[in-house]
Image (cartoon, rainbow, N blue to C red):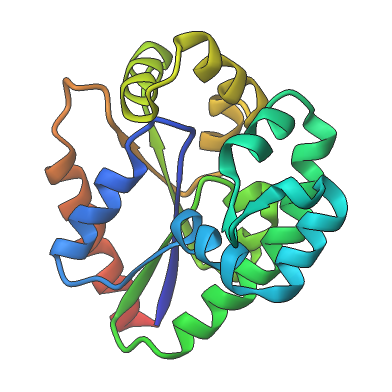
Length: 197
């Protein structure tokens, strides 16, 4: 079974691309979504966050996302600290999920594939790229935050050009080129690859 990574900067549209693969019958692991559950379910992760960020990291047993965001998106070192707590647990969770899948290939969708080191466990990586102005517009409207706040988040991520240079395939999401034909082409390529492996 081929293990394919799917990544891209905030607001690039990687989840939209992942959903198309899912419609094609491909199992998709949504790393960022799972990480949110792991933070609340995994006692070791929870305790590590509390000891590094304080008791107010959780309110009534629920992860206090706005409190943590206000810290990590203003301090790159604190963001790294949080990622060092969450990433190992998330990588282990993904590995367990992959063992249970039975398909020619699976997709692991994650914003920080390279940053977390999880790309090392995958066969190929797809990058989703989108112009900055579109990423800002999408994220501001989705997260109900200002474009200035979006820019702060973009600035903390690996530069788009650098990220795309590390990928094996690129999907362009610029609202001019259709995404579906690009995904279908990759789907066919992965089915062929899985047969030849």
